[in-house]
Image 1: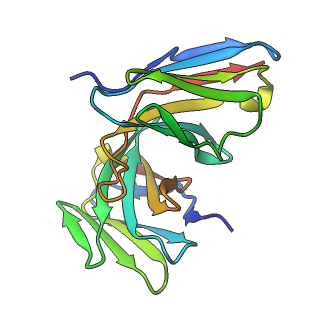
Image 2 (image 1 turned 90 degrees about the horizontal axis):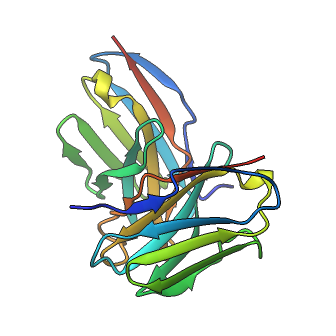
Image 3 (image 1 turned 60 degrees about the vertical axis):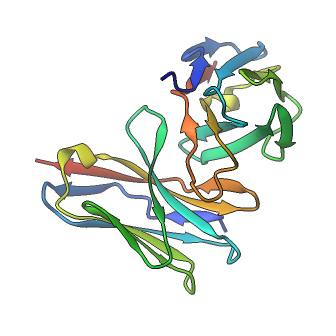
Amino acid sequence: DAGVIQSPRHEVTEMGQEVTLRCKPISGHDYLFWYRQTMMRGLELLIYFNNNVPIDDSGMPEDRFSAKMPNASFSTLKIQPSEPRDSAVYFCASSLGLAEFTGELFFGEGSRLTVL
Amino acid sequence: RKEVEQDPGPFNVPEGATVAFNCTYSNSASQSFFWYRQDCRKEPKLLMSVYSSGNEDGRFTAQLNRASQYISLLIRDSKLSDSATYLCVVWQGGKLIFGQGTELSVKP
């Protein structure tokens, strides 16, 4: 079975450029999460969606970040303009239900972003 | 204070050793607790849930102390393949909050 699919796996860009990360959740999952992982801050929740609707975006660092989920099988996280401090691994995860009791999020392999 | 705090590690142990990881959480209203495992340059994966009465899965034992807001993970008879980062996770405020993880390295 296909898991969560993210692209690109690696991206190197220059400061000021627009970056778009993509995610395809597991079919049938109704929750989608975007996390960012750095050595300094660990794994931070940026935003999550339920049935394509953004529920909590309190973790989005600033207006340079935006996320969309136009349909149940696709989501994007966009950074415009990018800055060196945005360098991190960005994970997308999906779950069936809110995972309050199962705790089970299925993560993609991540998109490793380097902003020079 | 961080919402979920863990021993930073790294823990370097020989094969066969028993190793314990600790985690504390800040919100006494938290209801659900979990341990995730993350291999180097891979995605996190759920290892096990943590129940109030404590629970075991093979060589892994998880315990919860609500009064102290403390969670632990014990690994017995550690294997080389246990080398990874172990993330303490708490359901809090309607979402899963991850600790920064404790790195374990099991040596031959």
